[in-house]
Image (cartoon, rainbow over all chains, first blue to last red; front, side, top):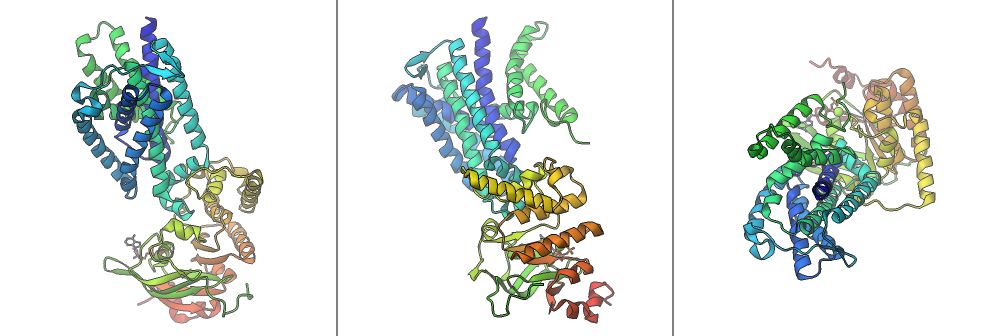
Length: 291
Length: 254
Ligand SMILES: Nc1ncnc2c1ncn2[C@@H]1O[C@H](COP(=O)(O)OP(=O)(O)OP(=O)(O)O)[C@@H](O)[C@H]1O
Ligand SMILES: [Mg+2]
């Protein structure tokens, strides 16, 4: 039972990192990405590779994961953000589809469909973190650090520039802001921090495959942000917790058809999101719609 | 009126044979103009004359079809709007384009923040910047509204916030697109006072304005635009007393 709860804590913290980092670009810069799972995945594979071939210290695995994701996101953002914002959604969707193919085919790095097995546990200053209860400390600390970083950014001139761009790109440019550059940097920061979640995920599960990094995962993270409340601090965490708890809640109610858990989950969160957008478009934590 | 700028000074901005068409419509048609330091130029003309388009060409918001614009002696061809802005050309928008989700204070503060990276600034610099913003908010009567989001302001307050943003910058040239339209008499007196003070401090202004009282009260020079063409450019009284222009302006052309 204890392991079960800490397992949930870990998964919620990892997905919350994804939701918080996606919210950073969605909520403040108005950039919608359907490729967040790509950076999650690239972070996981990179960290797994480093752990197996170099050393499982998180001082190596996490920075390597971040750098790989930052580099890839730069390739996406540089061309995509020079054109109008709407194209970014399309470009990110393209990257997501492409990445799933590469994740499934690049056997030497990703293990193909079978995935990477026997990833060494996270090594924190020489201590191996095995147990879910111990890993929970690591994942929650990582979440807190990521949130603190993003919070500091949002309240700096960088965050104001993002919000200014969100409100009016042309006015922002008229006040000397290099709009494509600022947007690109925000995407790179978001991707690099999403890779932290990937690195944690790989060492926590010790097994990863492409299933976790598909378009479904990108959509799930976006749903977490929207349901929780785009552009709010607590929203993405609430959204992540809610959607990660959903399967457990369903299995709790044994009158529900347990064999159809996947379909049931889709129906609940699809319906929930639709109703929420009608009655509370700002999300659970978000401001009510202005009259 | 500022009479210190002699006719021999090199103009801050030199505009030559500027052209822009949208489809078949010539929005700006072979316009040439010099903007000289300390001179207040008012751009008048009927709706659709091409005044806003003229600003958009100067600031790089639109690319020109032909012609040349030099700023401080440098050709601005191919320069992005943010580069032209950093070089000292400031502007406001006819539809304001405030940062609606941000407070009054953040709007004005952010108008001064160029860099993509948050660089640590010195305490002295931070204090100087705060004082500068305080002063701008006082002059625009927005000090009490500093924590109000731009979207929640009243009409006149929004117009003044648009002014406050440009006042906080270091821009040498202000291009103001109908900054006083729709203001009540008290507000535009205040607006005129602000403009006079900043002009006295060395800002050069080019302003688009329909209100003839404002035009006469502040301008050193009036440029009259109609259907993209510059029909007249000179002393305010001469231009405003031209019966042909008055006909076009008041819309009773045949
Ligand atoms: N982006 C655009 N695309 C197509 N046509 C445009 C565009 N911008 C302006 N025009 C056209 O160019 C002409 C000049 O418009 P502009 O907005 O410059 O006039 P204006 O003098 O500022 O008028 P107003 O006093 O109404 O603000 C108009 O016929 C307008 O419809
Ligand atoms: Mg106009």
